[in-house]
Image (cartoon, rainbow, N blue to C red):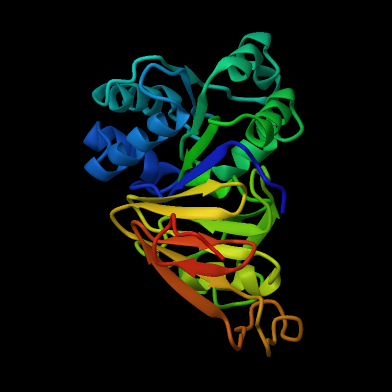
Length: 290
């Protein structure tokens, strides 16, 4: 697991991906209190309200509405040096202006929507490489994302899987993510959408990965590619497959239910922490580990 000087902030979102997510933005025309609190934490981690933040709305099908709401939300916490990147395709992702802005900002925020749009548009681009380089080498640089923007951060990414069918082999679809953090799989809207089985199947298929289920209005701040701190109002569920004993996942046919023995689960709330490499729960996120 590579150490990074920058920080990742993954948010479970208060909005569903795709149509549900975007209708939620339009209907409320605001972000709720706790997500505003998380946005303030993003600004603080990036160096304060005068710092330059770029919001990337690529995942959304209504980037103008989503972008305007983030401008309003960041403005409410006093951060006005915020700019929107409504990148829609790989050609636009290579635009020199956007590349220059990514080189010079203090933090990036990926909105929700469809995580497959993020990986297919940014994967292998110069922006992708710049983000990786800055995250690895620059103290204080922040990459944040909500919902789809959070799910795309991991090296292994869920891109499809209905909650009511997630106990069946093959119903959870995985692909490569943006790999800002290694050996994890991130899921969002975790409790609201009943996604435990979805994340459990993903981890059972990839037990080297730690599953991170983010509740709505809740996020994790990942430092050094290892240390998690929980922020927000809800819970984060950590699914650990390292000690799995029996599983039938390689034996049953597609569409049949899967069995998993000894899947370990931790539930974390605001102020708790977790060490990904050591797979260790921390009652206090900042406690010294001996």
